[in-house]
Length: 331
Image 1 (tube, helix red, strand yellow):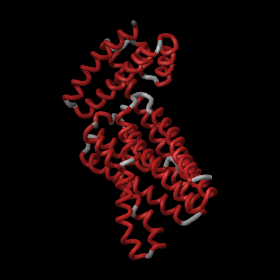
Image 2 (cartoon, helix red, strand yellow):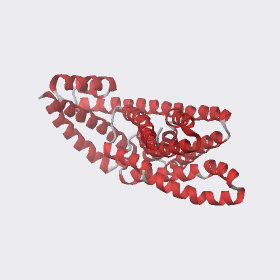
Image 3 (cartoon, one colour):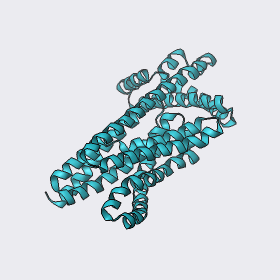
Image 4 (spheres, one colour):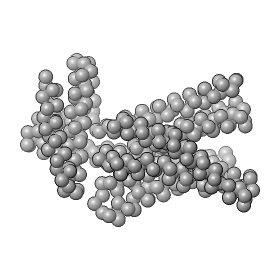
């Protein structure tokens, strides 16, 4: 196989699983999809600046280990000792930026996980291309194929797993009224990301048997995050049912609208029927209506926590917009 073919296939092998995983992550956000441009920005931060900065810092900070321990031992020690803190710190810059400049987009713990996972998927996609090509150059076509299966499929969610904990810590801090939690949770989330990354790099460094150990801890972590995501979704549904029920009483929503807006399954069915029977425009109007219903519930929850003027103003504005959208739904 020519070098050009290997290069193109390596890119394809990195992109296809990423598209699948990103699609699944995006689908999980049932009630309030995050802005596509912000998700894309998080992904691109992981794919380009984070990769380049991490490569430079990893190279510079690994040099003392190589000097002290020698090339062989230093090359083995650098991935678990240098890579995790460097890479998780650089990836987390995007999450901190979202927290500072677009914090209103973080409405629940699930949002933090999703933004963290997007940064991680961008990082993993580009890093995989590099390792696929390096493996081919060193071990040939067979080693190349094995590496693709390991990195893109079996361990394909690793970077998303690591940085999702950093995002989770930031999201919990965003929604907390405790100053100690606001300080401690982002640090704890980052430390968890670094530790899981360290554990993975350490175990795979020791050879075939320890890959099974890495598999146990990595997929255990993925299952833990999935559990947290399910919990966060159930929490979001409780918020919708609680806060939107109040809107039926004040006339913002009808009972039928409330029943549909507070159920992910019924929302999906409504949107599908709108697309099928009334076209794309009606589908988009309905999607915006449901999105603003979610925003209203989350704004009311935020006001309940903080009693801030901004949330109070958003509640009034969202009620007005929902009333307008409801009229369009009936037209």
